[in-house]
Length: 78
Image (cartoon, rainbow, N blue to C red; front, side, top):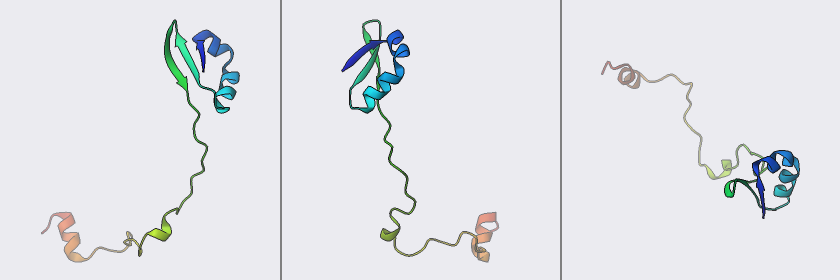
């Protein structure tokens, strides 16, 4: 685990990022008090339709016209 001051972190930021990505814990301190820890962001890709096979049927057709009763309820005419 590396403990560095804010000034040292500014000077060596690219090295600290590399160390953090390699698995080293990096903590930045203000004076003697630790205030920030560098944490890598996961680089997983987003996949559309991941659960498509687990969903049954199809969803509602949102572009289909509403029937008269539902439309009346929506417009407050009921």
